Length: 199
Image (tube, rainbow, N blue to C red; front, top):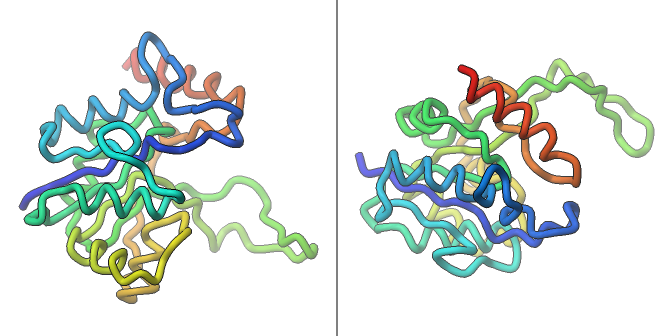
């Protein structure tokens, strides 16, 4: 089994009001945390950092496609990682790569009430918060992307479902996959970082 990884580090950081993946955190930019972890597991030849090693796309979808095309054609399984989730662990990476489902995602149960903008409520007990990283059968995901049907989709499990009718396998996980999105989120990442250092 040949593994590959696409690290998404090309975002513009509109909601953060800065290029968040380049924010310094304990001596290095936050994108380097998942990047260095992936290198230690997979080796440099199997990791593509979109926005750093290669150019990003106009959308997240374009960036993922650029990353997929940059990996070796004989890749069997690919993990898609976002640079804005810097506290990813080795155990989580291995859990996704070793999973046998063609589409698998980490999830967290919702803790807040969810409401439509027209005032209708959803039952949060029937819902998950989809997280990254996620892992896929490389050839199936690349085929879906190359179809040209998708241009601006925020989640790759949706692409696998809409193109191949493959439902994702869910793995409930911890709070360390918190995503840096807004100013102030680094305070939460700091707490997670300190907890990991004290293990």
